[in-house]
Amino acid sequence: MDIKKCSLFADVAETGNFTKSGERLGYTQSGVSHILKSLEEEVGFPLFLRTKQGVKLTANAQLLLPTVRSLLALHENLEQIINEINGLETGELTIATFASISIHWLPKIIHQFQQIYPNINIRLMEGGTDDIVKWVEDDLADFGFVSGRQLNQLEFIPLCDDPLMAILPKDYPVPESGCFNITDFQGQNFIISATGTDYDVHYALDTSKVAPNILFSSKDDHAIISMTANKLGISILPKLVIRNFENQILAYPLEPFYQRTLGIAVKSRAMMSPAAVKFFNLTKEMLPQLT
View 1 (cartoon, rainbow, N blue to C red):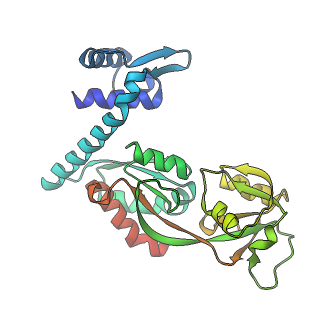
View 2 (cartoon, helix red, strand yellow):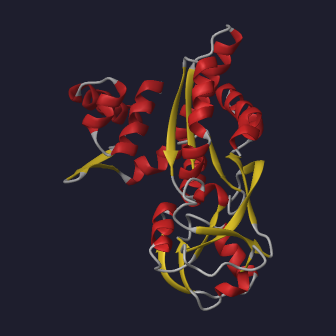
């Protein structure tokens, strides 16, 4: 099975649009149709159904997709190893990440990486924990920057700890101890990170047996900060998330202390591509100046 056909099949599965995938991969719309028709003849069954919203996979195509994505990941890894042996440093690297890491860590790391490896192309995918785990499991991302909770069967490589902070409106009474006791959230109007986006805040509340009055749930950390600043409730967020927003809210460490551990999640550390290993090593090297 031709690797270019597989690549186009996987891309259309992602975009749901022949034209968009053709533009991304350099094919005309007729070229896309011809290649996918050839692939359908090769496998012996239809792959796509046309809908008003675009195209979607047939049931049989859905069975193929995970294996095709694994094949493409292995092929990219193979290409990178061959290029490395030949003294060439080229390839593709897809990184899944929290928004806070893409804001505060990745710009400087990617800039430095591209200075060293200008021929390795990088793509970012932003989401919450569940998104990142699924993208890595489905071979849509080489690895994911994520917290160490709820990672299913993925391997986790820790990088650093990030304290959880109580965040409060600017006129909230200042705690005398300089810390906010987590039990003081009991019954308070609260804005919580959506389940699946974050597990660390939920873990802190659950293990402390604290039940705030949850008014809002959001996947967007910045929305939680804005709602807190506008006195819709109080909340808990990681320290990295609230960096550069200290002028809008008050932030205090929790008592007892809670933190999340940030690192990367991979299917297998031993099977990381050369480009992924290079990026991870550079991240470890640069992290002290970023945290």
